[in-house]
Image 1: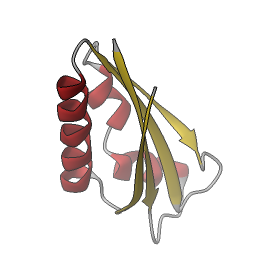
Image 2 (image 1 turned 45 degrees about the vertical axis):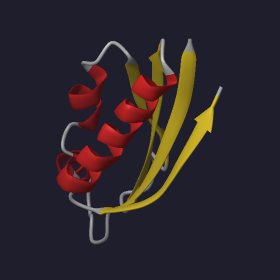
Image 3 (image 1 turned 90 degrees about the vertical axis):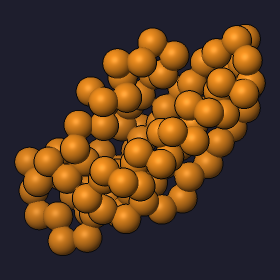
Image 4 (image 1 turned 180 degrees about the vertical axis):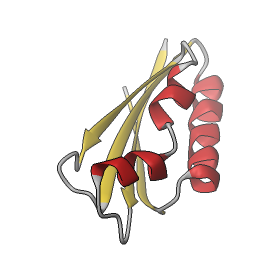
Length: 93
């Protein structure tokens, strides 16, 4: 079993309300949480309107599959989030 933790920081310049923050994040939890190999949560910056931090736990039998899923998550975030995707870190367990 291979496990990676992907943490992503996102800047939301000009965001003025919690409702706008949720809209700009575009349903990250629903989109990525459907995959049974991925657990996702907003892990930081919950009280700030202009920033958000998300953590994805990716699990698979092969390390290549974990790597592929992490790459897919990163690419989809870069394309779909209405904000600036900043630091992305991976930790292997």
